[in-house]
Image (cartoon, rainbow, N blue to C red; front, side, top):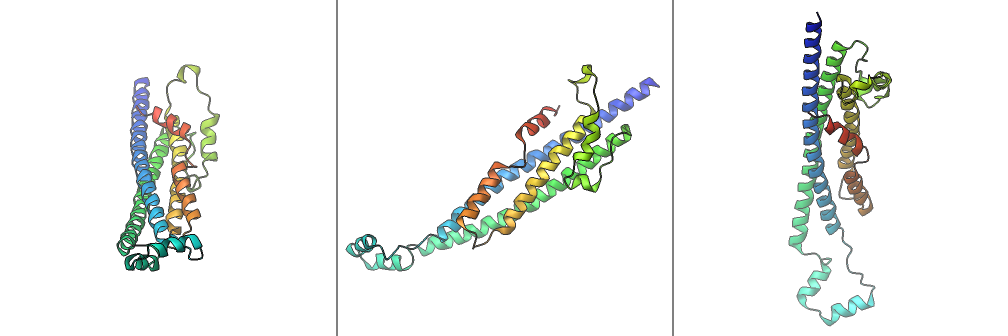
Length: 232
């Protein structure tokens, strides 16, 4: 009987570790997407900034004196065009379009990864529930970010001092729940940023978007480091 129970516990542990490893593999994919998305957003900001550059202030006496002193037909046409070359405008419009499409593609890929993370979290919760009836079932409210009640049971459990160095099945599941909650919030932020992008986006808005994207305010680095330490 003890051998059977030991075998079941071992199989359960192996299963949850494999699920956790698959989960963290998806996290790696998501982080790669975040980096690509950040570069696309910065490129979008630069392209729109170029197209929105202010024209030469013709009320500036100094600027007008310099232009008149070196005035040629080519310079005159350049100034009248807003000091922007036609080829440069076309290139930046194309860049703007390409970056916007790239960001939309990023959101689609990120959505798929988040969905896969949710499925793996459900798999882990089901495996733990099968092995431990006291572990709470994962409900929609937990998936939507309200993980406090879900983790309450885990946090209240006291582990023997001899087991502190060995992660339990519940440690893996709880960590997955926490990491998923952070990633889900980050994805929602990115989706809102991409949806808001347009030709009228102000420089200040774009600067804030780029900063928030790179700072990743919903991701706790210490928790992520702890999660990676659990990967066998």
